Amino acid sequence: MVSLWSCRSSTLSVYDGTPLGSTLLGDLCSTKSLDFISSSNSISIVYSTSYRSSRLEFSATYYSTYTTNQNVRLSCYSDYMIVWVSLSYLQSLEYTPDQVFLNDPWCRPQVLADWLEFKTNYHECLTVKQVENDTISYTNTLVTNSANTIVTHKKKLCLNVKCRLYQETVVEGMYAEDAIKTKTLVQYGMYAAELTFFQSSSFIQPVNDYPYNVELNQHLHLQITVHTSDPTMVLFLDTCVESANAFDFTRNVHYIIRNG
Image (cartoon, rainbow, N blue to C red; front, side):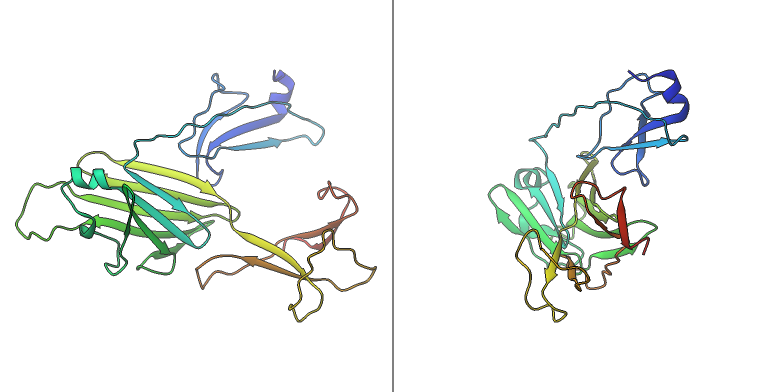
């Protein structure tokens, strides 16, 4: 139960995906129904308050569903994307696997069981990169092309594939246009990153001990790696803290780097 007083000073908003640019599904204090349905595998809950001492207690449960009859699928990773098209779906459009192309026709798919698979790095196959306010988007297009130059009434497949990378999240979206049905698929993931201590500034010998015990005033050599195929990607360290409590990195901490 949410009290009237807590709703006067606090809000709990639910977004379809990430809060940046996503649709607001509702608010815990103002929405009658407390059942929220996401169009992807991600929902964001944002809590805000106007008083430091106020609090809003709540509990939530979730469940997921999976559609087994999907004709097209998309997965986004840190350095590449994979697009699957059902072979039976292509046959219903009267196309063969060798008539399906990306922006770069030299990037060829492979047939895996009942699926046609396109796997491409973000800097290959004429993938288009666009830097936006809070995201970096990688877009490609999957189209069907008939060898017959005579005008026919065959249904065409035009699939715009977009992987959208946020500051801390990989967001993927798929938008399909054809004569049968428009398709939209969105999934969420995380960056593949590693933090490694090294014994010296040469960064040759990594530290494999956990935890890594050091002396006071000892120099620490830390390497941060993000796995991506984008050669123009820049890694920026925003905040780095140290704490005497292994379970608390927000209150009694010492800031080594703060806000860049």
